[in-house]
Amino acid sequence: MVDREAVTTVLRRQRIELPSWAFGNSGTRFKVFAQAGVPRDAFEKIADAAQVHRYTGVAPRVALHIPWDKVDDYAVLAAAAKDLGIELGTINANVFQDDDFMLGSITNPDPRIRRKALDHLFECVDVMDQTGSRDLKLWFSDGTNYPGQDNIRARQDRLAEGLRAVYDRLGEHQRLILEYKLFEPAFYTMDVPDWGTSYAHCLELGPQAKVCVDTGHHAPGTNIEFIVAFLMRAGKLGAFDFNSRFYADDDLMVGSADPFQLFRILFEVATAGGFDVDTDIAFMLDQCHNIEPKIPGQIRSVMNVQEASAKALLVDLDALAAAQQAGDVLGANAVLMDAYNTDVRPLLAELRSEQGLDPNPMAAYARSGYPERIVADRVGGQQAGWGA
Image 1 (tube, one colour):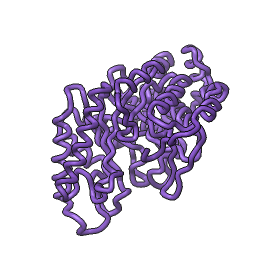
Image 2 (image 1 turned 90 degrees about the vertical axis):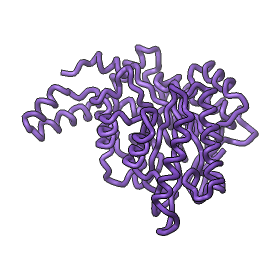
Image 3 (image 1 turned 135 degrees about the horizontal axis):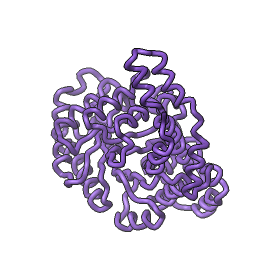
Image 4 (image 1 turned 180 degrees about the horizontal axis):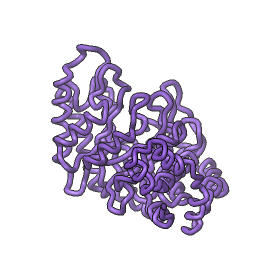
C-alpha cells in the first residue's frame, strides 16, 4: 500500500528552479520570434519568474546566465528577487558566443583564448560569491567538426586543466556542475559528449564536482533513467536540466514529447532518495519557448514535473519488490503502469488549495491581469533574448 500522506508531504517540499533565459525571446537557427511583453533586463526576468512561483508554489529559485543577466550590483538583484518572494539560484557560464571561441574555449589550442575563457569562468564564481549561489553549471560547445582538426587527447588534457582551475577556485559550499551534450555545435567530436565523460572528469576533480543530466542531450533511444540510477548510486548526480525533444536538443516543454520517460526518470530519483529532505540534487528547467507564451510555458512545465513526480511517488514499492523477487515480469511492470496511469491532477489541485493557491495555476495566471500589464508597460528598450 502507498501512504498518500507521505506522498503529499514530499510534493509539498518539492522545488523546481527556473531558467531566466526562458522568459526572453528565442527561436531556431533561422528566426528568433519576438513577443510582446518580454523582459528587457534581468530585473524583469526575475519579476516574471516570481509569477511562476506565485501560482505553482514550488518554483522559488531562478538561475542566471552570465553575461545575459549581468548587472552592476548582484546584491541589488538578489534583494529584488527576495522582495518578490524568490531567490537567485544556479549561475550558468557562457563560453560559446564570443567569436574567439569558434574553435573552443577551455580546450582551444590557443593559450590566450583558453585564458580568456577561464577568466570568464572565474568571473562567474565571483558572481556566485555575491549572490550566495551554490552551483556553477558549465556547458561547453567545445569540439571539432572534422577528423584531424585537432588532437582529441590534447583537448581532454586542456579540459581537465581548465576544470581543475575552476574547481580549485570554488568556496567550501560551492559546486561545479558539468553538463554534457551528444552533438551541436560540433558534429565530429564534442569534448564533453556524454555522461561518462562528465562523470570521469567530476570523479577526478573531487566531491564538489557533479554531473548535470539534460534530458534532451542524448542519442535517440538512450535509457536516461539508467544514467540517473548509475549517477545517484555513485553520488555524482548534481542536477537536472528538464526539457523534451523529438529528434535533437529541441528544448521543448518537459513532459511534452515523452511523459512516460519523465515518469521513469523521476521514479529512479524517488527510489534512490532524490526527493528526501536533505537531497542536494537541483531540479531545473532548461527550455526555450519559441512559439508559446513564456510565463505560461514555464507554469505548464512545472506542473508537468509535479504530475510525473506524484505518479513516481505513488508506485507501490512493496508490491513491486515482491513481484521482482518472484520473477513476475508482467506483475512488476503492471505495478509501475498502475501508478503511471493514475490521474494525479485532483491530488495536486487539493494540495494547492491546502497551500492557499488556486488549484488551476494556468487559469489563475490568465485571470491575473499580469500578461496584459507587461505588454502595456514593457514598451521601448531592447527586449531580452537568446544572446542578450
